[in-house]
Length: 433
Image 1 (cartoon, one colour):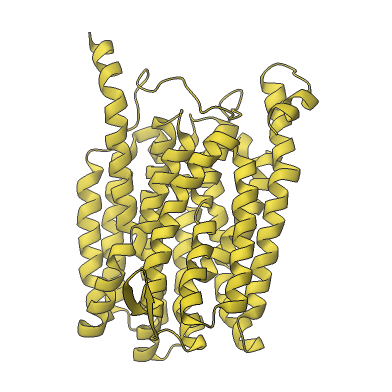
Image 2 (cartoon, helix red, strand yellow):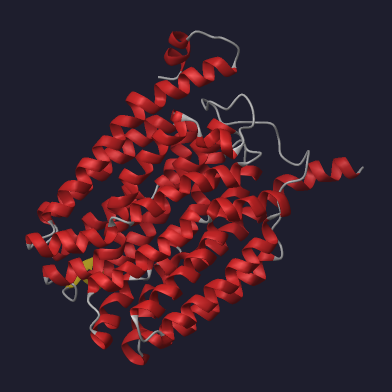
């Protein structure tokens, strides 16, 4: 009877787990996607320089990503509840530190604390989705990541209002404490699936690992390192856009120019930030679902190529306020899918037993990519324009697109052939075209 009850309840319960994960992800979104709103106000108060302030963004991303494998170790052994609870508390502490920071060092400390907290929440929620949804892995990872990508969309205007009326310190305090309370409350209801709760099904057309790979084995796999390089290449351009969008709009002289679109009139920067967050969220489940149907590598090629086109168009026509809004949206739509495609591909390739740790190892590529973010300001200052930054981003995305279909796809086809018992590489490649 207990087994029958579990079979009946599990399908509905996994959707509750997914919704809780999305909610937690939405609460940490402002730590990354709302950061650009604070850069200019902080600089106006302390005159530390945008490059120095943006180092805090890199510190945040490094702490968020490079500790995820450690946090994943705890999750895979003790469950998601404690890790997310701790992460939620750290996020509140981090924004309180940001609110009182009177030196760059203190600002960097706040960024590090926030990164640790955000990484604990992010890695746990993604890993939990990957474990609960073996049959819709791309879609589930995409929906969870969408909470992080689009979670800040509804708070762009409120944060801007609080900053304008009460100062950026008040915005840090109000939103930091509020986000922390929501995450800590939701964490009590999170758990991993028990044996027998998850159906042994996979999406059509998806190649799976023949066994469960340990993190040490994953770190020695050429497939992992190809994905890592691709993640860095695509991630760097998107992170630059995320961190530099407000300074870029200001340099173009269009940040406060009114733009009317779909019957709504807002300043160009506000409009761009809101649309970008929405599209950056939509793209994750969309391309995750696409990859469940046409394959991970094929989807990567389409998305990364689209990102290269979007970045190039933004560099050519972004000085116009309306174009800036539309094209920045295209850039974010073609970029955000990496946070659904790479975790699902990683779990497909190496199994779900250590999914949180292994996906966390791959997620550290975001930290490596963040090291290039401050260079965007340096390069723009040195050349007097953002054109060189855009050009490099275009090249990186095109390289990643080609690696997906010319390198990663054949390598995974060979692995799959070995996993199913010696099927010839040629026949496997033909099957997965």
